[in-house]
Length: 378
Ligand SMILES: [Fe+2]
Image (cartoon, rainbow, N blue to C red):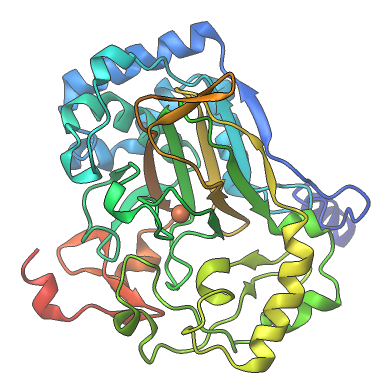
């Protein structure tokens, strides 16, 4: 009897150790023309039925819709992301050509995310949310990011923020980071849907799994001795504060998860990092830098789906609104991307969620919650 139970348990066992072949790049799933047409039809019909991907009725029944109507190969690839955290799981998958983007209907790129016409991206919101639903994971919003700002955010280079380490920046490399590394309840999964990338900016991905089995340089990263200021969307004084220390790695010591922001934790001189913590981070960074994957240049219609506990993201520096033609830079529409974030369990985020909105995370900095005075205005 005992033997039988053991055999059953083994069927769920994953490959935790593969030091010889650690994954170095995301899987790329090529979407067929038929699947693309099907997704387009799905987006249109959901819009007709529910009006908005933020309709409570739609979001409540998200998983049902995801499994009923998504093409099976896409749903299966995403379900795997929700259950496989093994040594061979990179933590990101690229869906090449997920949608056709009608560039003319989209019109010129707005000057900032505040000016996006939500009507033009409504169907994309339905498609992205279904992908999260298939994991299964639920789209959420964060007060710390745009005061909530809805379940999907347009990421657009903003001329006034060109040099910032944020999604609105462009002129400097956006160092790899897991999203909201300064929160304990950061997103579990992220999607980045590219509507245009005429500047041909490569995306950067970095997976903790690319190191193989954690070595000596990794061990100190499990200690709760690291600071992480809030990101560059905040003033310096507001960013550092008196937040507690946290670890970089957590979870299974043999196959850990990661919470890390290179710009804020290593290169921000005001981070308040102890000399020992900084030394550990630098040693780790020396190893990690060589494992950053930046060969993928997204095209309009491509989507990158990321497990935010395994894989960090970033991008190269670029000149927004200019593309290379031969040896010349010529004007083009600026890059445009849609980001959605999700949590696999709404139950676990309720201690930090808005009292009347279970999808809105009110965590400000490592467990600290925004005051009730703010919640009451939302
Ligand atoms: Fe990010």
